[in-house]
Image 1: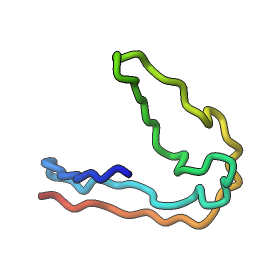
Image 2: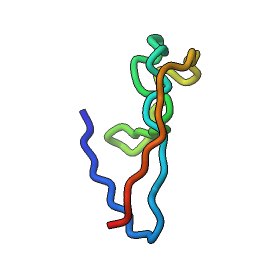
Image 3: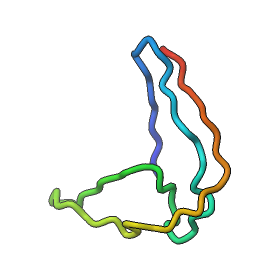
Length: 67
């Protein structure tokens, strides 16, 4: 599980899309994010689902307001 906090310091809102990959059961994760991982020695580990099919799904645009 991963928790993160995003804070924008720009004067403009940070625009992003939420959803759109709900019909991608093969990936078992949100495919709109690119995540790189490494093992305990620092060696890159491969993505277990490198090119899953994407059949779309419901999505909406959103924005993180400044500050």
